[in-house]
Length: 149
Image (tube, rainbow, N blue to C red; front, side, top):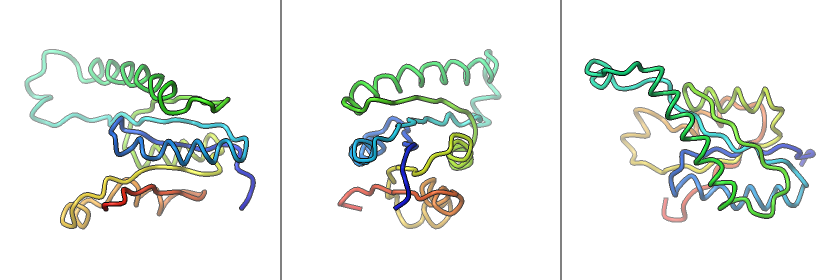
């Protein structure tokens, strides 16, 4: 395996996504790597919500991104204690596109993410963010699954 200096770890703040924290932390310690913990705020709201809003979409998305930054700091405290170098980033867009873009821009040597293991129909129609990242990433991707999936 090549040198691992930067590990991009993704979260959507679910318990499922937190399953990626431990393996990422173990690898960061082993390689002395930096953790880049990322959250992607989807940059769209459902049309029905937008139609009846008195507040601008941009204001809502900005507030959500600010709140996500605070939640990422909680994830660092709770999930990455003992890792010397952890940076957080919140970005907006389509999750799989933004994860791949972040990995390229920040020179990630590895992406670590969990998968939700949704049902066959949902997966067949939509695919999964993890699968889309796996297909497009220019670096190795470690997908952490639940043992029950």
